[in-house]
Image (tube, rainbow, N blue to C red; front, side, top):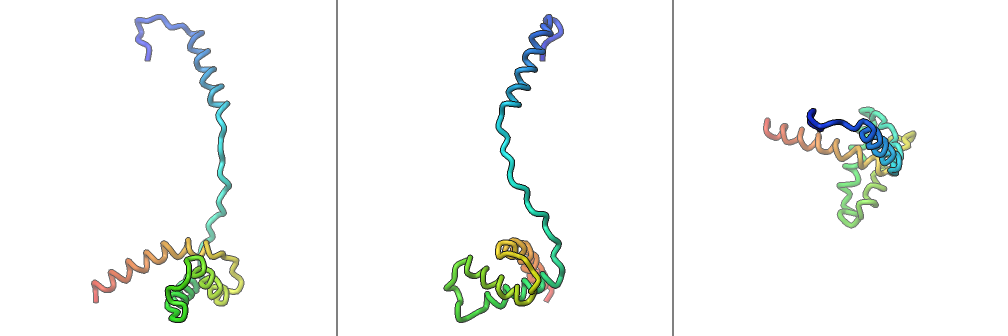
Length: 115
């Protein structure tokens, strides 16, 4: 801020502002690809996801001898058997399951406190 007692050189201020605009215009702007709009999951889809996750997670034959990717591939396969028209990927199922599981765990905790 310039004190009022100093004379203002208006030409210098205009040149300074023009330089700032040029600097901004010279910057490279990086844009990320637009994300797909999140589809609303129906209760039936959420139920199918929960059933698929439970079925695969309690499989005693495979147990803990599978990778994360392998686990979600199997969940996807079972989910698709329950919801044949679904176009979800294993990553979409995993993304949906994470907050859904947090809500389930919280509900279960409250339920256990009541019981």
